[in-house]
Image (tube, rainbow, N blue to C red):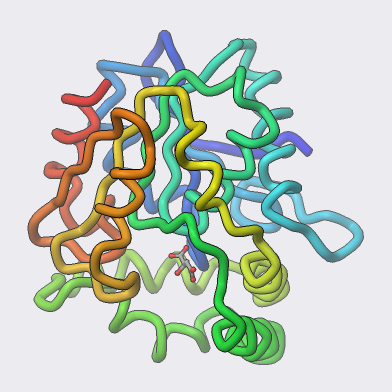
Length: 250
Ligand code: MLT
């Protein structure tokens, strides 16, 4: 499946993959702010925004990775700098496993290598049922307080809620189940052989403390940057801070 995307700039491709339960617009400030440096391409994963929904339900992180590979082929390039936030990071791990030769460098934002512990998996099923029955917006009450740092502006809240509103409940349900079943990628980390940037928001509340540091230490030569005034959704909470870190890395 070839994915829809927003793009700006030219030259080498920086491919950006969003998290759950949002869409390509989480990267809006990176598409505009880094276009002097790269051809920045922010995709919608299947089932939302500019991308088609599959006719049969059910997908995995590998399915998302395969969609990325097909999309990259259609862009006419051999390699990309690959950035993923949160669930987009889980997709990036699947992609590195399946298509290592297509990755020039890796940017991991607000994500983790570990799979879901058993008690977490039950919550994924509940989340999927809620999304399917009541829509993605019904997830906002429990999720939003953990996604944004304390003091996030009303504008950032509104931007994130607009994305929640746009994601079909069935899509969020499939993503939740796909995250439940994703493999643990911890053993992949020492074999990552491309330059890697690990980003965490200094006000991260969703991931356990030390997640980004441990991941950066396990990836040979990885660089770790903590972005102030940001929680989990760094790209919209502190776009200038993130863009500066990515610019320095690239
Ligand atoms: C995300 O931001 O993509 C999700 O919160 C990740 C997760 O639930 O594991």
